[in-house]
Amino acid sequence: MGEIQNHRDLKVWQISMDLVETVYRLSRTWPNHELYGLVSQARRASVSVPANIAEGAGRRRTGEFIQFVGIARGSLAELETLLILANRLRYVDGDARDHLMSDIAEVGRMLTGLIHSLRERQTR
Image (tube, rainbow, N blue to C red; front, side, top):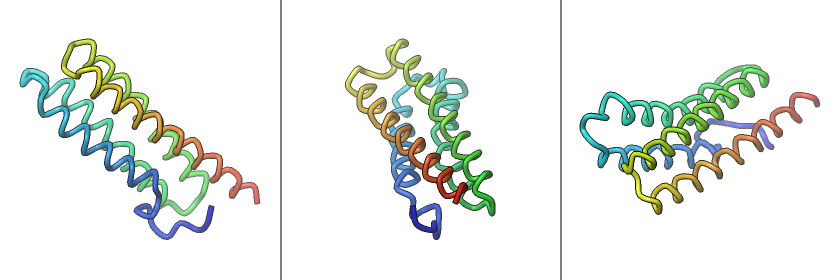
């Protein structure tokens, strides 16, 4: 991994931003009584992923970056759980769920790869 100039250069940040947009669009169709519950929680969890990547990239130490990428992974797992719940409550159909789960898995793989790359850089 080369030197990161800006968090916006990271493909994982770009894709996680796309995921946030998808979650916002999809959650608009959820019941109004969920606005301050599941809608709000899913949106916050989705935003937390690119936000923590950005915050970590802005830190001076690689160890701090790794910590924030770990937090992003936790938020991604939270988002996955909330989307499974939304599907169980029939707020999300199977196709939308499958598409989102695929996106979540891709971002998860990328976050894991970023952590491995950062750890390698840290040991040099």
